[in-house]
Length: 318
Length: 305
Image 1 (cartoon, rainbow over the protein chains, first blue to last red):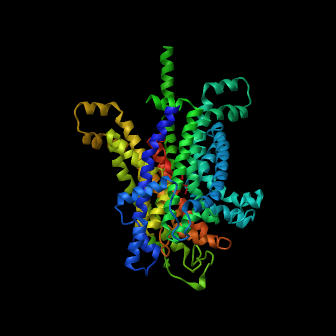
Image 2 (cartoon, rainbow over the protein chains, first blue to last red):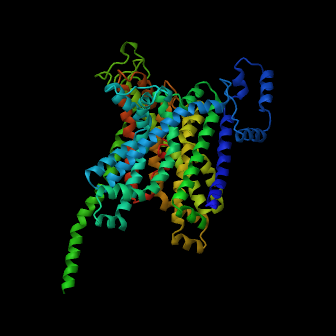
Image 3 (spheres, chains in turn blue, purple):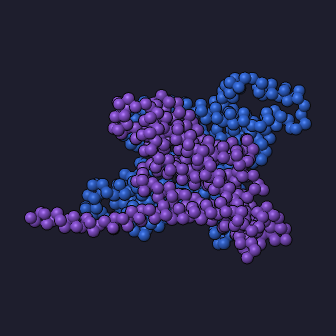
């Protein structure tokens, strides 16, 4: 087990290095140097050169990268050009609504996927299976921001059940918090759940055909119990990987859906930073989200190894 | 005697299944047919946009702002009184064009990367680490960052999308190429002294072409979705130019009264993407390549679109 974890950690090093190089290069690609952006259009050459020296922009590229990467590893991502606040501080303030939205969407997606996927597997080939299949095709083919707009039209504009945009912090009470978050979470959850539904269905079909399920049925256990208790439990491992995988996607997806609903999360932070040409914030947010995504995947992989020892045994053997 | 009889009826039974089987396989290709039909409609819209559209998509008519669908304005007008139908048609044209170019530009390098890294283990080690690094980025955010930093224009948008899709497609092509490489005929060629480039180009490439076509259609669909999301967020096709994403963005502000600005461009996106996904699914059914699956990224990671 320890060897498996060590191996996974080692494999992460080159990935982090490449992520860092790409993110660093992003700002190097900026038309015009950061100093002239900081100082505005009417700055003279001398003060630009001075600021460049202060920022370390006159050093060779390699040294600049080393300095920057060093700071990143220490958790220092620089300060916003516009607000003069540390990027990490701004990021974590905005991360809370995004995380809440992603978690809520994940719950919706998992519940929908397990129910629909199991039903489709149980009633394979019937109208129910086809209906579920139609749902997954739509889910995959409609971008989440479009789902968001459709849900707003139906549930906010037509039925007036939910607010069309906005965000209420948990400190305003649980009910308002959920009321504002439900439509965005459904929009986001629908897309994720259609992928999970497909995986659940395939794995459930496999599980339902295995001998132990036939034995359970033969013993006269009710079919609901067979599907949801015995088969689902064994089909769950591959589904777990998809759930883990989807979480990184959910956080980025949340960033897009947030914009539709004016939720003050990471998406808003990045979009507003584009308008302010605040590259340091964009750079910092991207690297933080990527690191969160990578660590989540690592945790899921390790958990997967704990739940199912075959995984790390196989990878050690190879 | 009895067994021969049995055998014969069995054969007869099999023969009677003949046309039935054909029908089943046609049903399998139903997806492909429906997908191709939807795609043909959207393709004609994209190609013949100048002929279809009667009104200038840029023309502002303050007198007619936000009017509903009518004989003059089929899809209504937006907040500047511009014709939503001609803007949607041109938006679909740009989406289609961008999606196709991005799919071609990302599948070709991915094909080279995938084939080379499947054949040369040392190269594989380096190339796949780089691809893993790029793949670690959430697709939409990386694209937003590239467009934000380089400035929003159609070229920068395409560069961003290509960078985002190359790693995902390379991985899929590499794994398809690896499974071909394991086949005994490749080993036989190798032991006969065939050169690496002959094996890769003449023997491996044709065998992974189905995967390449399937990936092309998925990336095509994905880049249309991502492009519309980026345009919606203001990091895609720059503003006065019509795009499905920015019509939807303008529509969001007036969603309480002007449903036509959301419904029609939304429908165009769905038609484009479903058509392409059906073609991709139909192709993979036809080639019986289910296991290859869609580009993982697509899960809207990314999707998050």
